[in-house]
View 1 (cartoon, rainbow, N blue to C red):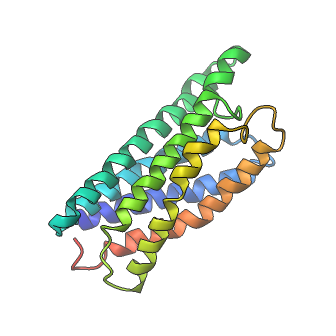
View 2 (view 1 turned 45 degrees about the vertical axis):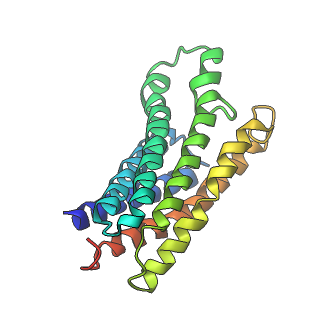
Length: 209
């Protein structure tokens, strides 16, 4: 059960990353914010699912704490980003009469808005969850070892995403911040898609789950 759950969750997350990345690229020519936000919700759902499967398959009592921490921080990430993206797909999208003052708070597309910063904070906790998950991965083969290191390195997003909103990096006055942010997200997709694929592959090992 853990194996199937882990594989499914990782593949759902990977599919979300792929669609999200493609929507960002196509977004230079068309407004695909809805597709970006919808696919991002599935990234979060799949991410928590495979982390839960990883914790359930953990057979090392000494690593039970880090496996629980991975799921806990992954859940914080999921809650934050689901609030942001669900608001974008519903309240913002379905209410074109919202004032600029309201949009400046809840519109993720407004660089530096409250929900934009919540989104960064969410991805910071995602990085923290992958950092702890790296300690749970068993080095059963070279692909698993590569996965461990990718998860650990991805942990650097926590301090970056936690601190950046406190400084004038992503603000409405910074004209180049929005486009730079898009290219950073595309780069993140290129990094995290192999993580999802390797995670799905990890659960194929018979001695893992």
